[in-house]
Length: 227
Image (tube, rainbow, N blue to C red; front, side, top):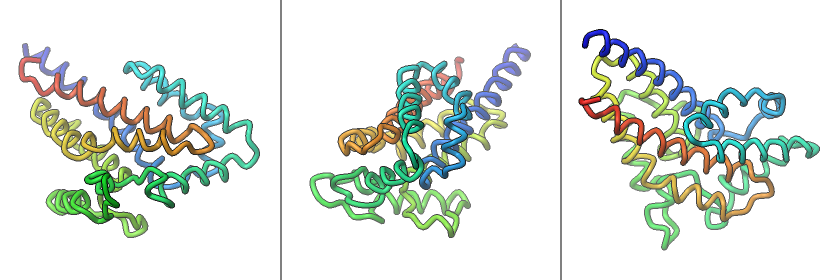
């Protein structure tokens, strides 16, 4: 039994490192426009290991779609500038026609939901209670999707060494449900309906949603003390 428990903890640590990488990668893609050097690296296959790992989680269709979006961009002159225009259309300009990356924007979609709303206040309280702070250089409300993803990445990384991984998994499920899953499905749908020129960001949102849901299922199983 001791050997089995040790093996499970080792698997938890390995999975934690891998999961933290995915959440961190997603956070960077929503924090700012993709730099030309990074986009060129993706064209050269730099994202392939990450996408292969996600495909192995049952997200093959989602990863194929994102790869197809990258291939379409690769054929376009000034691809980084064109993708930056999509980023601005979706996340920076018209909130009604785009896909605001803030939880507060989805609290009351029947009206123009304010930024710095209840979602931002809840996240600010969570960050304060956790001893975390947003970098001064990232001038966005606390309920920005990049912050949610980055906090999840940090939580996963810290929990990877937890002796009681059942309790750690339960905490992570709670965070996903309270902070991300309440609004990210609608965010992904808005990315789709906004119809940017390229499919990169709609495909990315679909992949992110698929990963978060798959991660929730994994954590529910791991949170069970009988596993």
